[in-house]
Structure formats: structure tokens, C-alpha cells
Amino acid sequence: MLYFFMTGWGIFWVLSFFLFAAKAQADTPFIPNIEEMTFSTFPPIESDGSVVISNQDINQLGFNPNRSWQKGQTLDTIIQLGDISEGFGVETFTLNEIKSLVNLNFHQFSLKDFGIIQFQTISSLFDAIPNLKNKKIKTIPPLRDLIKDTQCGGQSQGCNLLNYSVKKITKDSQLASLPLNQLSLEQYKFSDIPGLSNTELKEFNQWQQVYLSEIPGLNQVSFADFPNSLSTDSIEFAQIDITFSEAEYESLKSISGSYQEGFNKSCTGGCSHIELGGNPLILGKQWISGNSQKVQGGYGILSSLFGGVEPTGRHPFGDVFKVVIGDIDETTGTVETDLYFRVCQKGWIDLGCSPYGIGPIPFMTFKENNWIFF
Image (cartoon, rainbow, N blue to C red):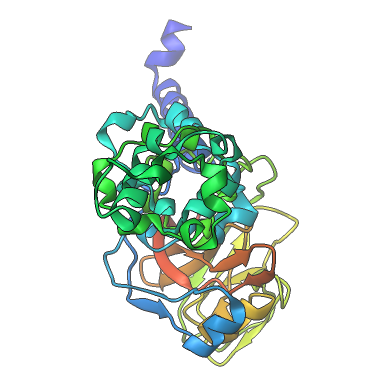
């Protein structure tokens, strides 16, 4: 046996074994680790963009989706809670649940850091936290100061309203509608409003319009830890056989598209794409670049945003975001993938979701012969 390994043939077979093992390892499909994926781990967005509708439309909708962003801005400052409600169920989180997931210290934050508070009045706060009803105004620092400053000339002495219960205050429509954003919220702690940290986000007024960055710790929550977590259990893989630039005129065996147009949308007139193999289910099929093709997207009233279209692509991880083939370099066989997000509003009136138009967010890079998820 020792003699065999010392001969030329022995060395050849040993080297061949290690080369085969190395190639097998390189060709093994790579599955993104959902547990390590958070909104804070994504690179900045790569282009400017905006969502703009008229004030008249905003009044009719009862919802303001308008926002703008610049290249280099982080995703958590662009995405609002309502945008990921359907996919992640984020609205059922409480601050305490987020704290436990990311090991957060609330002492470093003030009420100003909890963006939901800016939309609250005394009445909406009472609706969100009914256990406040029998507590006296003077025992809740933000409400005490709001009543004192607006109704009592800034003086506590002789201000009988401070002895009222929250429930009694809310019976006066003028007092009930006093907004908390009149206060300098940085002077208050979360604990200054009893029950705040144990209340689900969806109980607060206009929670959908709060940016992810305005909920402490939310951008650090793993995609595996959201109430509706992402999963890679059903992901299929194929091998990238060949890459084609836009010089390729047509692509007729597509596996890309949208929920609205299906995921077999053909392309003609300059169709950069990748051709897939390694999986008999889609042998010879093509995934078209979103730079070459736009498809109809969205549903409901918000489907008109982004001109009603989105880059062609697929949803291997569900509907929170769309995976899109971006730049393809035919000379090097390099394939860039990007993520696109959308605007959604699912309150008591369902306005639907826009096309996937918030992007591109750089995701993963592949080469010919690599395995890619679809």
C-alpha cells in the first residue's frame, strides 16, 4: 500500500481526489444564512428614487406613501413598517420582544427614538394602551407636561386637570386630540408611559408610516426571528451555464417575471440573461436581467406607483423582497443580483402594494458554473 502511494499513479490519484473534492466544494449550492440576515447588514441603495403622489390623492387615500431617497442611503431609512407587514408580520412585535432578540439597552433611548410617538395624541395613546385609563395624568410625565404646558400656563399648582384620569381627559375632544409631538420627547424614557414597551406596534395610530430606523433595534432583528420568518427550506437551485449580454436579441424560455404576469415572461429586443442547467426541472431555461426587462407589478390602488412596473425577477425568499439579476458581464461570466422592495398599506382599508421599485440593493455575486437559487 505504501509503495502504491509513492508511485506516480498513486500520487496522481491522491491529487485527483483532492482536486475533485475542492471542485465539489466550490460547486456546492450556497444558501444564504437567514439567521445572519438583518436590515442593517444590507449595503446602501445604489440609486436615487422617490414615491410621489398629489396631496389630493393623499387625502383620498388617507395615507401618505410619499418618500424620497438618495444613493448611499441605508434601507432601514427608506422602508416603513407597513411595507413589510404582510411578509414579516412586524406589527405584532412589542418593544420588549425586540429588546430580547437583539439584547438592547432601553436606557440609551428616549421617546424621541420611538418614531411611533410622533403620531400619537392623548386619545390614540389611550386606545393603544387601555390600561392607562384609571391612571392620573400627573403620574404619566409626558401627559402631565402636555396638559400643564397647554392648559395650565406651564404651572402645576392649581391645575386640577392633572388629577384627572386618562379616561376622563379623553372624554373632552379638545384635550383628547392634543398631540404628543408638541413635547420635547428626548426628555422622556420609555418607562414614563406605563405599558408602552409591552404594546404591539399595530395598536398605535399610523404605525404603518414609521420607518424601520425609528423603532429601536428593529434593523438588527434576524430575518429568522420576525413573527413571519423567512425560510430557505423550499429553495431550489440551478447552475449558471452561460451568461449573455444585451446583444442577445431574445429570450423565449424564461423563468423570470412577476406575480402579476407570471414567471415565464419572454423577452425580445435586447435581453441580457443567464441560461441555467444542472437541474433537470429547468434545464436550458433563462433568467432575464431586470436591466433588460420591466414587467407589471403591484396590486390595489398602490399598483400605480413606479409607473406600474418593476424589474423582472423571482421570489425565492417570499414576497418581502424580489431577487433581480442586475449587471451581467459576459466576458468574465459574472452575474450580479439585487434586491427590490415595495410600498404597502394594509390598514383597515387595504390599499395593496406597489410594484417592487425600491432598489437596487446589492445582494450576491455569481460566476458561470456557480449554483444560484431560484
